[in-house]
Image (tube, rainbow, N blue to C red; front, side, top):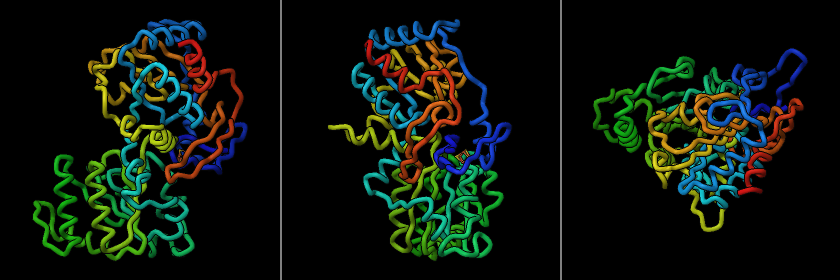
Length: 375
Ligand code: SF4
């Protein structure tokens, strides 16, 4: 079975009658979750068909609709969501896909997860804490396993470094950890780039430590940077990657929330006449939207409720903060649990996702199709 608890899409998960083997704690909780919603309209229980109709009515009457999320849907449902967005004139906002655009455009080098396992000798966790977001990354690919050219694993063959805003769980197992000020991230990267160019960095950070870090990075035979949600802005990461690749060989892999974010980034880029930027948080301000459709995304968890003025439609397998406040909440089957399809792993590998158990829930793809038929 394939776990859709994060973008690693681990395909070795075995589901028994009462247990779930090989999955990490996030995957186990994801697979065994019973936190489901019923159909709701105006925060009251409603008939499923009527809720779908109500969602369609709201979308038809909206002048500035915006769709958000998409990272927790299978590729096929994302495609239907794009079709629906085009039909109702909605903008799609997929947060944190910009760095995928840089990879897909060839602005930064990347690699596959098996290549990380086989070749990586210096691994930098930049603004991420995979032990709490992608828990099996370290054991399957990034740190502990022995790979083709890394037969001794983490003890001697690999150096793992964190650069983050706080001393995270991942930092606690790395050989080196740099904790940086959230307001002085760019200063840190600029200082590191100076050090990589053999200049003494002008910074209030510890210069000796930055020079030591630059020395370690320059010696990398196959370096990998995993960039997470609290990494510096993407243009700063691209500049750093360019500088690193003047003296060594570094690849970038983003660690983003959602198991299928790379797929929506790819699909939005492939739309005729679209440069992909529409899907990355630009365009209409969410406060200006008169209707927001959240597809598998808990918007209110990341945006204060007072920033949302439009009608809210939620299509989600689970109850979330957003579904509790939504004008229309429609429950759907979860990808990889009771909905099959395909997804794109964080490194670009397409993975077929079977279902783990049957249910009577409609998939988000079917719900979107039904809305599409009536708008
Ligand atoms: S690492 Fe991610 S994909 Fe793998 S079992 Fe854990 S949650 Fe699931």
